[in-house]
Length: 263
Image 1 (cartoon, helix red, strand yellow):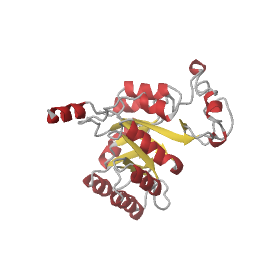
Image 2 (cartoon, one colour):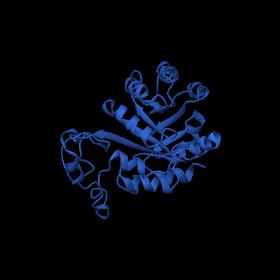
Image 3 (cartoon, rainbow, N blue to C red):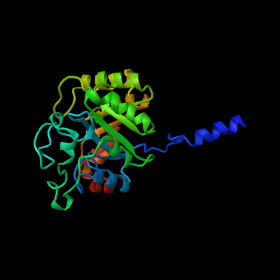
Image 4 (cartoon, helix red, strand yellow):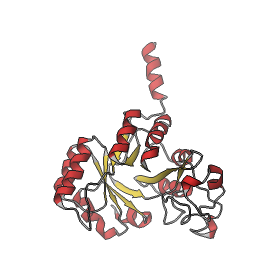
């Protein structure tokens, strides 16, 4: 009887026992932002409906402490308001229009909370790539655990910030964003190797490239079960080269075009 009760309890868990997650694919950068206002619920929903392998979002903390989704430090570019996110209260942020600058047909779209953004996405079949500044990683990690998303949501941040988040939530999946040294259109081999080895040594689950690297370095990552993200690519003809390099997930602002070419 006790065994049956335990099995039933596990089956009813909010965390899927056998989550079928994509092994590679296209990531909707800030959601399906070619078709909807970036970093909004409609953009995330559209990415999920189009079966993107991953969706990326950016978390900020506002003046009154709430976690909201916005990439910039200010609201000027994407809303009809002005000012720093850190200087604006939640009520002030929610009064802004986050859609009208994209297109008048999106007027009335709100800046979402982190809860709204993550809650609108399926609990399986899509990775949730959460970019965080150092001051919010622990709270975001705890929310990911509370929501039963530890199998699919990961935090992308600096190694020092990730260490704090992992201390609070040891099961957390992480993405290394601490890129060593300087880079231009390509990495010096020693920096590319250091980025890879730092990622492995710190037991991260993902790494995000922003310039090409050597195939031997992505092999080192794959051998350690690290998935490789690449930011960013909007040109379908570059996909074969990125795949040959060892990139697993390609972040893009052109979801339809890139998904159509990634066969």
